[in-house]
Image (cartoon, rainbow, N blue to C red; front, top):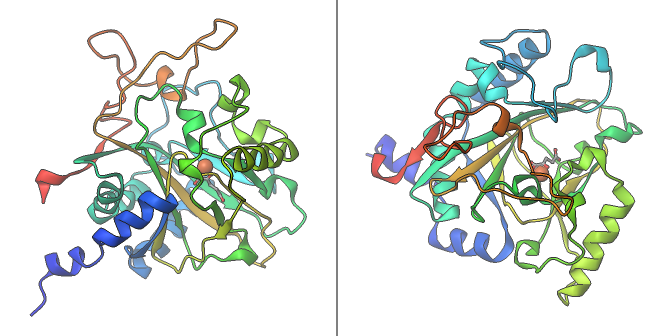
Length: 300
Ligand SMILES: O=C(O)CCC(=O)C(=O)O
Ligand SMILES: [Fe+2]
């Protein structure tokens, strides 16, 4: 008889999958969530959009993404959804998800870093639905770790017609050119054409061409990407909303670091306005209220 533990182990990336991720910078998981769990995410997100909160953020940090109904039919982003919605957090905390991340990142511990609830309305020409090329490490310059990664969790089968997440294969291994302080700004505040150009400049600098891989993600499966993998996504040309959560994850070693821009100003991530301080007075990225531990290998 197959035990529950063996079943779950079969969902983990194999050694070959881990090597694949190291080489390509992305990985499509097996079915980690049941249909029921995914359907619960749809219901809980609709409740969230209608105003349901388990608790509110104590205050809104300056660059918080926070869609509200008054913004209308644009792409919706809501950060800290794991903090504000217990029904959603309960599913995001499913151990197998972070166990997969731990294997990929080759880390003993995985903590939640951020979660963003995302909704692309089914409007083919909606400009805000486009996610320009970027990599997540740019937003996390106050982090010490280069092993952070993101789990992209759609709430349904997700393909190109819905504007699924698209990876630039192997780009996490590139050396970056043209990086300046503007890379710390979120893609929603930058010019997409300029970002497309920057992607191609980077490929050329590394003697590579841009290979775009749209992730075809069946319901319950999860797409993972390394924090230096370029990715983006296109319009939602389907007749249904594209619903997802981007779950950003940190390895146990990640910590805050001071990062000063050329003009002398300090880079600040939204956590820096919310989390507790460590012994040295710096933001503590292991504050269990905002950045709970999701997996420790010793928990196995
Ligand atoms: O919504 C998308 O297609 C991209 C989301 C994203 O940038 C991420 O998961 O890091
Ligand atoms: Fe991203």
